[in-house]
Image (cartoon, rainbow, N blue to C red; front, top):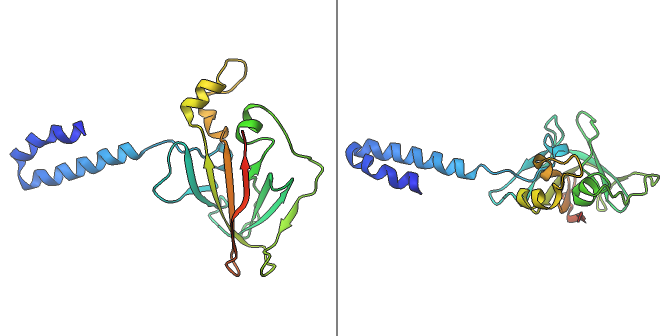
Length: 193
């Protein structure tokens, strides 16, 4: 706001062309204000594509894609969907979407592992058509960087301020069948605190 007010005298001198400068500077100022750190965990940086304009430093919604760019993914899971592993339908790359023993506050910060690692991982198939190619959506919420730094950086471990993105408190995973359109917006909902 101060930047915009400071330009008013310049506009009077420059006239119409000054209005163009004003709009460009104001647009750039808004862009700078919109640059915020989103709570995208480091293991998902190459796979999470933020969607929409309501993402904040405490919540982000987006699509999950393979690092090759493909969004057609098979989904494997175990432990009541507390371990979720997509497999790319194009390049067949396997990557980890969520592991309750490694991700989120309890897994990352506290080191708690609630998973039975011997439980088999099974491919999820669409309950409507039986196919296994899905688009995956995700919502991740966090208490934010400031809260993470205040609560977790006690000096007793190797955590850094940049680790806040890995200490999220919730992940919701939705699936949409690429074949028939069947959708489950609540396929997996996991609190990690």
